[in-house]
Amino acid sequence: MKTLDELRRDIDAADKDLLDAFARRLNTAKTIGEVKKIAGKPVFDETREAIKLDRLESIASFEARPYVRKLYKEIMDMAKDLESKPLFGVLGRSIPHTYSPQIHDLITTDYAYTVIEREENELGQLWDQGRRGVYGGFNVTIPYKRNACSMCDELTPCAKNINAVNTVVFKEDGKTLGANTDVYGFIYMLKSSGIDPAGKNVLILGTGGASSAVNEALVKLNAGSITFVSRSGEVNYTNVYDSCKDAQIIVNCTPVGMYPEVLTSPVEVDRFPSLEAVADLVYNPSCTRFLYDAKKLGLKTAGGLKMLVAQAFKASAFFRGANTDEEAEASVSGDDIERVTKILEKRMKNITIIGMPGSGKTELAAKLASHLGREFIDLDIEYTKKFGQSPAQTIKSEGEDAFRKNESQVALEHLIKSGCVISCGGGIVTRDENTFPIRCNSLVVYNERPLDALNISGRPISASKGNDVLYEERKGAYESLSDIKIFVETKETLEEYLEEAVRIYDEDTCS
Image 1: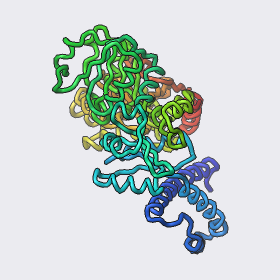
Image 2: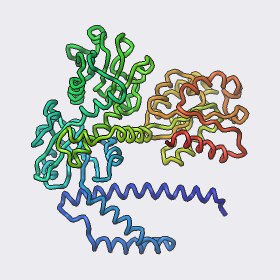
Image 3: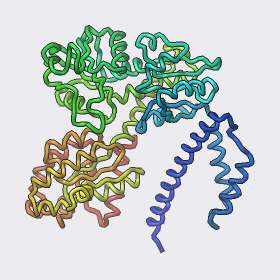
Image 4: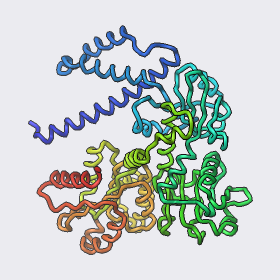
């Protein structure tokens, strides 16, 4: 017979499967509601529901059969509630990785929210569906912000000023109101990060749609001068260091540095001697190379996630009945923006575990991944998949330097992902080129163990140098790179060590 702990792990695994299936079912129900509304069909079909319940009961296992009807009646009622809600969404051409549904689900349950991917020639039909009540409105992302501006019946002053709409609402009379919430989002982003452009020389990198909203915000905040930088403009990325060396604030409105090309930065921040602050509209990764380099210089920084969340709150206010910019902004709370930003940032960031070889990083990462319902990645396993041999085999045949170069390739490939739990090799901290990938999108956990608890079996570097020497060489890097430290004394069993480590993690991160 299984032990109680083993049975509890079975229950945890079954619960994870149930939650995944429930999420898929609700998401499908939301899409069914959308399709029904487009086709003009009612949400509830009593006959179909009865047939469905009979079928589910007939195919259920003998253990589940007595409970199936009650369970699915509850699930179907939830699905009907979801399908009946007003439907909003984010509109774009191809937006598979958008965070907008997550954000709006965190803001309110007053409406359902979906992803609406359309080609440009389908926008007219989409607007007709909105006027018929299929949709209550959209958030609009690139490349349709200009299109939306021309298709709306009414525009808020802010949207009219910058000729770009990122929020559309279908009113009861069938007319469409176009608003722009990016200006508000950018102002919030700067203010909440302690950046004041009043009287300052500001550079805007990029001349696309986002730069118009940023320019409008900077004018509202009384920036001293505003200069646009583009690849082929009068001020470009070659002459900007001479012509704008007095820049005090730089705002990146380009996609440079966005996942997956995270190693690039639009400009070299150390070449602007008067620079005080930088802001980046990119939010994946959470810390771009542009922001990372600025932080190393001690400059103020602002990342794009706050702007994304703040503009979503204002858009949500329009979705729920606000008619003017002032009315929408008055309903938004800074505390709520910060709450949702922290939740989303926590979801987006990896949990990356560093520490001495043999300290239990792999086991801890696997345990945390299961505990948190996240993907587990072990960089040593990924190394073996990529190069066809284990780290130990490479070290034996080609030497440590060859292994470290290969390891950095694997690290970059996986550390820039989002929402994973990642176990790193013990020596990942020995190469400076790994520092930014480790820091750019991770909560870094240092798993520290007593040296006599480390397992050096099959670890050639540990065996040749000794744990004492390795620890002295690396402890400073482990400490400086980590956000939190988990220290667990020697335990009788691996399970006891893991339980204590997870308890410490939860205590340090669940606030």
